[in-house]
Length: 147
Image (cartoon, rainbow, N blue to C red; front, side, top):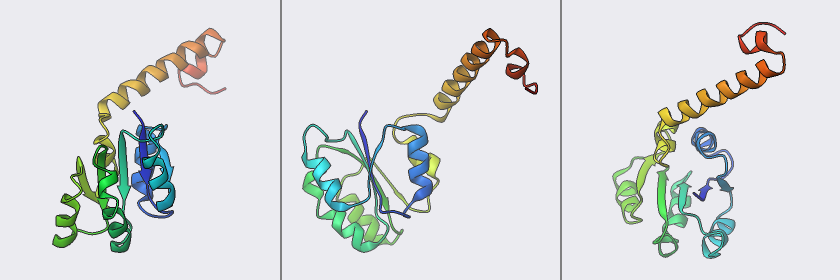
């Protein structure tokens, strides 16, 4: 799944980190111009766009792109919980809408990857690593021993 995340540097870093943990292939844009270019290019158009507005002005810029977002599943992160901001957010028809101070794991989970799935993937990776280490004489390391 092609995911595009828009956030200016320093905005919603906890959310950006959580999304990147869940979907490391996520493309990140920090400039509005590059976001628009990626969305307008059919070969680079994302399936999901995570849009984080760090301020009301930035949110207004995102609102101007409404026509570009109509065929993209959008996760919209608002700068505040003001009633007018939330109402305006709904006009973009996001699949999920949150706020910058929301739980990052909850937001990342909206990308369709459950926390338990991530746990299973990590468990399998640990088992593969253990098997690999045991095969190379590293049984004590695999069992948690010192090198």
